[in-house]
Length: 122
Image (cartoon, rainbow, N blue to C red):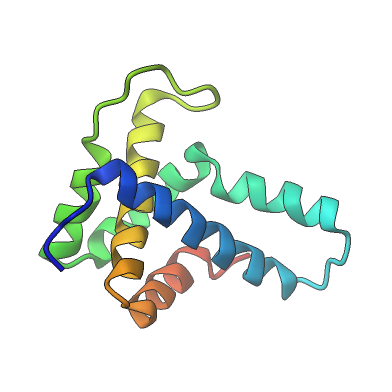
């Protein structure tokens, strides 16, 4: 795919991809209370938590994947994020952009591989 989308649009899709993967993974914990599941998911997919995962993610990336991460990370922000530092927000946006790109490319196996490396301890 020629990159048809800017970093923030890739991150928009990637946010949904990550949210779904986290929710699927949380179901395996045996928790059945949807309120608790939602609270657990929110703690995992928030920008500060995603930013922490970037240090694990970067060494796993190909050059192409790293360039997509940077495309998302370097997107200009018009305001200040509410619950994260600007650095955390940019790092999380880069990660989401990568997952969005991989999804649009149909690279679901790679998505699962990276996700399992990052979130195996859920």
